[in-house]
Length: 301
Image (cartoon, rainbow, N blue to C red; front, side, top):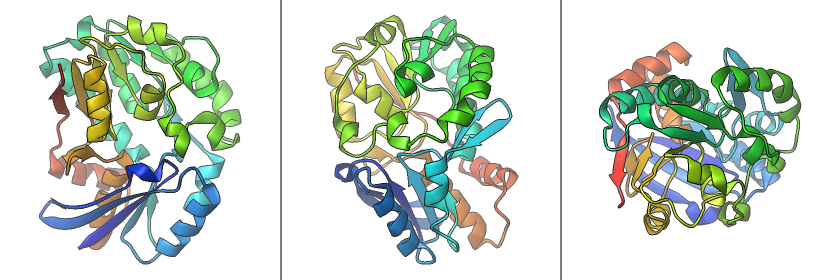
């Protein structure tokens, strides 16, 4: 059995271990929260090194992407360096491939709230560039919230060209900042401190990282669509209470929850290594095609 462990900077209250089968291969998936403690996470990754088949970085991206450029987050690089034997992944390759593909599929097949007629808020583009480009291609109107939700700056970014140009200026600086400034970690993931609620109200579709979405949820989401991942049954119940129409997740629901993209990428990488192949973006895409994944659509109200 392959073992994949996601070491997350998020809350340990969301921890989960389960088993599933991918391509006839049994895999044990674990998510272990470090409650925002970077040093504890680094030490734990070192302990796992050589003991498991793949390690995922959860609650932190290793790379921000815009266009054909990637910017490595300094804190994530330090975490990944703690392992020298076991591959460490953050899900960024898989996001670019899978989420772009799934948005195109939703644009063609999801008719309950058509994307072509929708106003879209993506809370952050640079951590899900494949999703951002595909949404910008299909949506009637789109706002990217990178400045608002990542840096607290009350400026909207409209259009894929604008966010690409902004990233070229700011990303080299942002990746050097302490990660806790950019993203809720540990117990902060449970905090509800809504900002810029008017854009949630404006949007028909709310897309991107769930912790940014959850932290900023307005009281009502009647009839809206959320496109995200890493949601638990508790999260689904919260969204149902707020009146959400549909929850769409980009990773499969396994044992009642959708795991992070880093976990799924870890599974693919572990299988590639087991077969004696080199891990490349092209090889990840080959294995992804074998899985034939589709969005998971849950009608809540």
